[in-house]
Image (cartoon, rainbow, N blue to C red; front, side, top):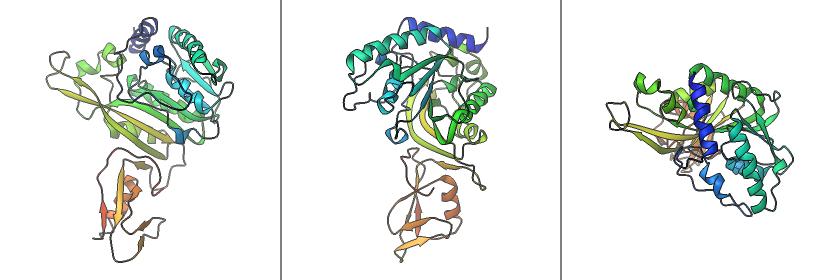
Length: 322
């Protein structure tokens, strides 16, 4: 039995018997006018963050969500895309698809604006999506891709890239870990299925996205997630796992490499009203400008003593140098 079979079994169990503790997110439940989330969806919120962001969801986008869980994020996406089949939910677990379908009936009862036909539930595999090229505005997954081993992760990201329209965005939430994990942890199929031992360092995670061709990466949040301690897990040291929320945008790859936003800012405080580097970056005096890591490096290389650079906050919410 492969690790993907183990994952299938874990989420089959979670569909049949909701497991509130399966994943853990510190995100509050969305509170929007007229949006009510059924309790069963909250109990089946098997994610480690949120992939729903209003600025991604303008003009009734076509949304693809892989790994449906109890349907909570599908319902949230539908709030912004109120059209038949506007949101496609893909899952390989029949029982999870059935549970979500049932939950949508409850959502209909609680939300006068919502119709189950807004969501198209599809049996499918993240490694081979039955979705047309360049047809999706926003693709998303929450606490799924960290389960995949390297080769499968490359396939899953490549499939998301394929189905996105130009400038479309892949929005993800996954556990990450900066500490090395021993082989016992890495090879424990159940711990991988539980979104623990497959966690990658952020730099490796981001490189997977840029290697697939995404020209712009936004790291939007970085939060505490889990602890693996020696008393309860096969490790000699305490391991700290975080979750991150990331948007990978299908922009053309710049000649000088991807724009990766990790929450850095540049502040000019010189004698003039502004500083222009001649490459499209204008810093207004004493006004922070969000900059990608690449631009921060280029500005630092100028050797000026009148520009301050903040460290990465790993929280980026738009605007800035690109």
